[in-house]
Structures are given as C-alpha cells and as structure tokens.
Figure 1: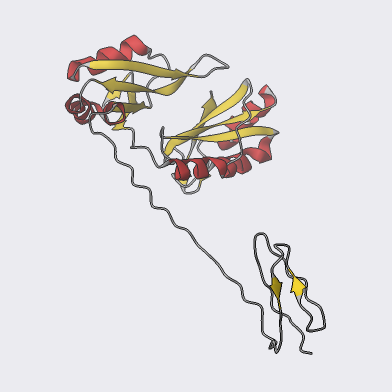
Figure 2: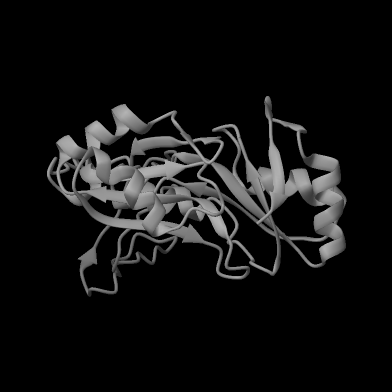
Length: 241
C-alpha cells in the first residue's frame, strides 16, 4: 500500500487515513475510499488581497483652508498672530500651540482662513516674512492620508513619554524618526521619550520634535552637547521646551 504524504487542508474537515484500503470517515461523516494514491509533494496555496483606497478632499473644507505657521516668536499669542493674518483675508480660527507642562509657546500655530483664496493670499504674502526677528513658515496643512497608512506610520514609532524636563529640537531632517531622535540623545542621559512632530493628518515631518529627560541636569547637558550638532545631514537647534 502506498504512503499518503499530501496535506489536505480544510477549515472544518480532517481526514483520518489508515494503512489499509478500508473506508474511513471525516468529521463531517462523509465516507470515502482511497486506492492507488501516488506519493506527491505538499501543495501550498497563497492568497493575496489588495485594496485600493482613493481619498478625495473637498477644496472648500477646513483642511484646505488651515495654515501651519512655524518658527513664530515664543511671545506671540493668538491675538497678535491674528492681527498679522487678518490683513490678508478673513480669519475663522487662530491657535498658537503651547506645551502642556511648561505652558510655554511651542513656536508654531495654526490659522484657519474663511476661504481658500484667503489662505493662498496669506501664504503668498507671509511665508518667509519676519515676525519679531524670526522668519516664519506658512503653508497649507497637507490632505489626510487614508486611515490604514496613517495608523501604520504612527504604530512604527515608540509612544512618547512626557515629563517636565523637555527639549525642543528644531531644523530636523525629514528622514529623522522619533526612534532615531531618541537614540541620538541617549548618550547624554536617561531619555524618557522622543517625538518628531508630524503635519496633522499626514506622516510628513514638521521639521521639529521633543525629547524628554528625567532631570534638569540631563536637559542642560544635552543642550550643551547637541545644540548646532549635525543629525542626518542637518545642523539642529536645541533649547528648553
């Protein structure tokens, strides 16, 4: 009697084979009779499903009118930022971003204009201009990625652990990730967490991030060692957040 080496795969049925040619039963009570079975190699089947997601963004939506404003002075508040932008169109909302631990400005914010034309006008007139001695960056926040891609990008990086002892790291190369940022600063103390900021709704780096430590001494040591240091081809700026 020939030996059966092939694998029969089923979600509910398992075959019990005997060395004789007697009938045998499956778990579904089906009677079969096997004879003259040739020896053959197991067969493996692979099934790949591919889904294409097409995302469209309404050009009149908030995402198309919401502007990122970077490198603003730390003293600039919502009212002052609004005065700068309202000269170039109607404003719906202004929000300067603040650190939740220190209460200090994170030196960037968002301005939502009432129309796309107002947003484009503000970019044309204000991007690269000087506010309080700092050259600001103004651009439209990018359209959202589909949910699968966005979730995957976030899951690839270690969650950020915040603390009162934190650094702002600016002028980051677009290739720097949260994990590589953490590794770079790990030589100067106990790094609790590191985070590269992303343009809202996308995986694109905003060009800055934060690194948290366990003590003030470690923060001072990191500033002394890494301010103006080169990380992935770009000279970074490091100061207290």
